Image (cartoon, rainbow, N blue to C red):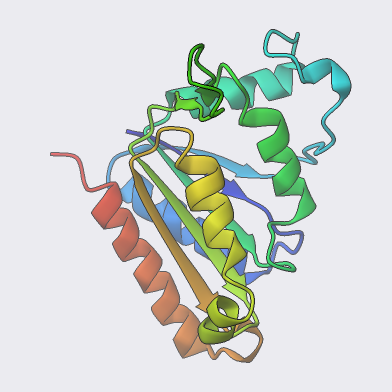
Length: 199
């Protein structure tokens, strides 16, 4: 299998980086290929220019490469902090520029005006890992857990990916080394479940 890991955190010493590295190592240990993107390290440009909006737009090489990659991979792993109930702007821009019509979804004629797209991604699973300094109960009861809605319902559910799995690790700012080690073990176990060792 081929798996894409998309990491969005500006601090190379962050726990997000540790999560992404643990996922990468576990996937490779299971015999799969990994495309690893640290969006900040790559200086990904999140601004969507008007020239790219059309379905048949002539895309820059870097965007075209990202599009070809997500269209081909068997799984996606997204790693980012919870910033105001949203992904960091650089990752939102990646979604805007890469999760494109004709690549990730398409609208069908005669859909009675519902505007519900047909998903085009062939990936069988999308996993999302978030870090937060908000307790889970408060995140759900007060804020409605917007990241769940964004990734599960508004993006991957509409792009045709059948299996969705998300974890929020919190509260990071007060977490101990032992707690973080346990969280990383959970990440590795998830990789074994969704991208198991090849025969």
